[in-house]
Image 1 (cartoon, rainbow, N blue to C red):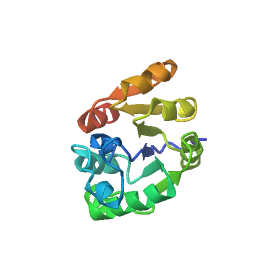
Image 2 (cartoon, helix red, strand yellow):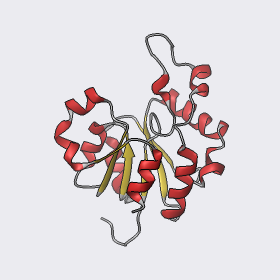
Image 3 (cartoon, one colour):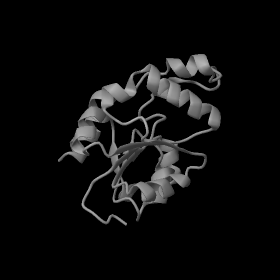
Image 4 (cartoon, rainbow, N blue to C red):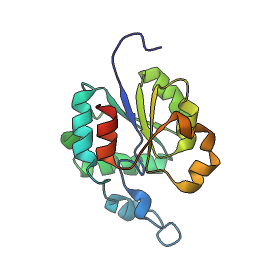
Length: 167
């Protein structure tokens, strides 16, 4: 693995690019109208444009979701002019159905840096993806998977991500 010196970025979508933290599932059933209304995370377009340049276009999106959510995510990306605003290629979007499957995709794509909001997901990548970033983590989820915390870098916003990757 990692046969050359290239660097490759992988980015989760939900709660990292698309800010669906504001939705209360107890109140709102997530349907097409609600999903389309989710805002982007603050400064995500600008940060990803900077990172796309830094990684020389080697940036991939990788989301664990259902088939229904996959359709909604792709629609959200198009509706928000995501590819134009970030420079990320439309073909660089991957989906898996189980969280642990992200590790296999990262190995295949030779991802060197990965950003996710779930410590559980990053825990599967310890040892295979050298630079792991935990984006705005949930306290309860961190407590459950705390053994992995020393192996990741916690980031609080997209400015923090850019600063910690481009040192």
